[in-house]
Length: 300
Image 1 (cartoon, helix red, strand yellow):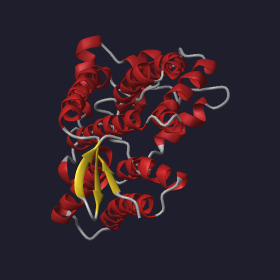
Image 2 (cartoon, helix red, strand yellow):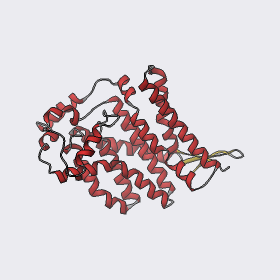
Image 3 (cartoon, one colour):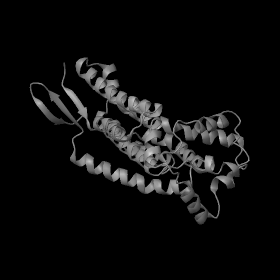
Image 4 (cartoon, one colour):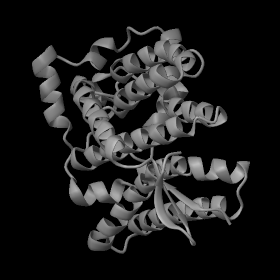
């Protein structure tokens, strides 16, 4: 059995489900939604423990992949099970405040102005760009792993988890459903694409968690990944750049976000980056524990 290695990214991966379990233990009610959420959060912790343990017990390529990437399904699982927490902490939607802010700033709503003026081929293109949001962090992480750039991968994972968990905290404190729902009566119908645009748009309408607009995670995380790719994988940066431009355009042209969602994403991502720099300068990338030697910090 090799030494057990716990990355800072692993600590962050455990942090969200542990905090949610603590909150759930204090406020949960015996409903199916709470039971499912509590079970999922427990499973997230178990996945991390098993993944790290298997790597230590059976070192090899597969267990290395498992230990490096186990936080990815945890992020999706936490996102999909936040509803009971939002119901308890912030049951009232904040859309009316953002709608008034957009109207005061613009005299109307960008999504309403764009309704009916986006050609079908552009709807397809923008929706593909919007959906690519989920691809870029995973693709960049996979490229860094394949190239054995483990220190960069660990820092990327730490950065992404900080951004995602803080973004979800805002979802809990400032629940917003966005123009696609709150301004539905202002639109002539769903955006019409030629091939996949309409289907992708309707798929997002069926998301398990729809109070996820403030701040725009698509904006903040995409820009953070774009910056990280510029620093560590320049070829991917140039591939990402035009797609991210389309993604950011889709956030307001296709009714997902208010202008204020995007505007606030900028100081949000700057704050996340500042926190990441502060923590990275003071906390080791990882700790290793061996029964005969104890615990010591390590750089991956």
